[in-house]
Image (cartoon, rainbow, N blue to C red; front, side, top):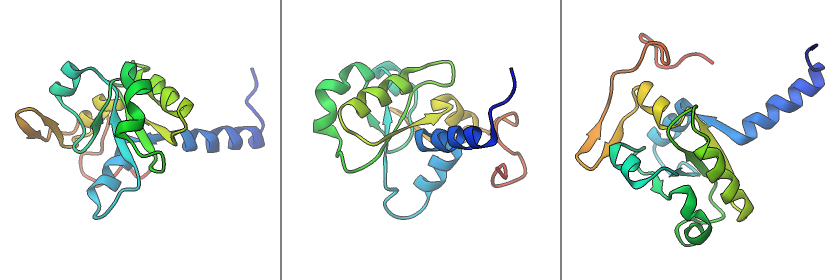
Length: 147
């Protein structure tokens, strides 16, 4: 199978950036002062949320989006969804449900797994934790990966 034309590849990758955000970019915006311009939505179960979640995230399991999203979220504010990680399509299903309701939405690639693996602070019912960054997912001696 030959690769796509450069124009087709550019269109595909441009569209991908409109639909996805990575954990490093989300964390950087959340760490800056002021309004991030989006809300982060954790689409996992209550038990999963209790294990740890992105600080400031809204908890709304995917199954409850149709009945609760319009009460909890503002359609004028973009939403970034996440679930467990790359092996789970829960954030994709949550993003689809929100888009079908008229929300602007992106999916956070890597989900909670990569949030924690990259060493970003998370919350549990016991308080906040900051894990050590996994050297396979985050640079050890630099502020960012350079990509």
